[in-house]
Amino acid sequence: MAKRFEALNRLIDSVRESNHDFRITTDPFPPLDSEKLAKTMELAKKGANNGAEDKPVQSAKALDDVEKEILNKVETERDDSYQILEDQLHTYATRMQNLDFDGHFGRIRQANISSLTDFKADVAGGRDELFGLRRNLKEADEELANFKKDNGLKRVAQTKSELATFIKWLIIVALLIAETIVNGIYLAQGSDQGLVGGVGLAFGFAFANVGGTVLLALAFVPNIVHRSWFRKLWGLIGIVLWLCLAIGLNIAMAHYREAAAATATDIGATVMTRLKTDPLALRDIDSWILFGTGFIFSAVALFDVLSIRDIYPGYGGVHTRYVKARDNYVYHKLDLIDQLKDIRDDHNTKVDTIIRDLTIRRRECASIIENRARIVRLFNDQQDRLEECARKLLTIYREANRQARTKPEPKHFSTQYKLERRKPVIDTGDDWNDKELAARIKAAEDELAEQMRQIGQEFESAVTAYHQLDNLFPENINVQTTA
Image (cartoon, rainbow, N blue to C red; front, top):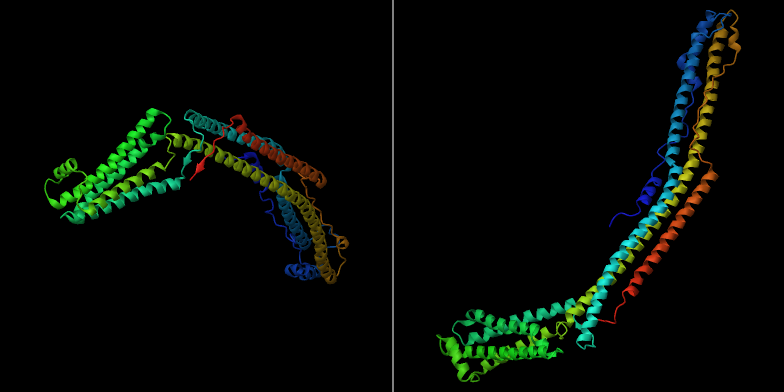
């Protein structure tokens, strides 16, 4: 069966896509350790050495090399932190774009239309299938009704289940095997060939006895109950033929047993002579037993075959076709209803998932905005810390320089350093106001809920339409009995 609700499936795949592969660390901008950095850069030593030489001179306006090195270190750290911030902001912007609420809201509207259309198409396809099956059932029903009317039948056809029919045919096979064994035992007693030598002959008699009875029971004997006198004549002929077969074949087998015991040559001619002159002249009681068992096997086979199907010729076949058409229609209708129920339930499950995942995406959107603002605050704090660190480093250097000097210090030694702040550019084009987003999601949920209601309504209408086919093609009152 083709995959359904393609638009809904694409929508559910998109809203369930992961949007949180970024990592927010507790401290993305590690602070500089001013004391350790001062030791590493040997600021006190360099300050004392330069101060001993009265460097920089009092009139110097530019920073000396050590001061430039300090500021270069701090500003490099600021730029590195800014790059971290830019990377984080880019990640947040990408994640915000991937939330794609506008796209999802548009696809929800599209899925609402296509999903309902898909479901209606499935309903229509099932109705077309049932229409043909119901018409076939109507034709089979009319055939059965006409057959009963034409043949004056008011009773229900007597049919057997598949298991019962199989058992009936097993009985025929068992009769054939049992008669072969019985024939072999009795024929071996009157023959010097023994049991093995009589197996072929025993099977031949058994096959002719049982097989012939089966053919007569299937083709001729049932006609005895037919409404037509001509067909009754054929049934009567069938009964006569069966009596001739059952009596004649088994009496011949009994004579064969006695002839085989009397002579080893011309057994067939001897049997024919005995049948013509005195067919009932059996001298051995075992021969009569052999005749009786053969006749019983034939009679059992006859009644067994006659009970496999309804005895009225053709009634069983017509009734079987009707039952098959009815079962095919009923089971297919139930199967189609179950399929539509599964489709409806699968659709509703997907809709519930979409609604839940949209709510999750709303929380992700709020989290992205909050974390983005947080990292901007952390970067601003980092710039404040870097400025403070630069001031401490300059103070360490200048104080050491000042203590070692013999001449006055430059004027800029008393000037506080101010770090040039870098301001990040934040892309808020894809941002959503939480209240507005909540309202849009609520509207989408209402649309999806309405879609679920319409799918449920279409399901109920489909079930009603399927059952209405029963009124479009009404049946006669035909009921089956199964043995």
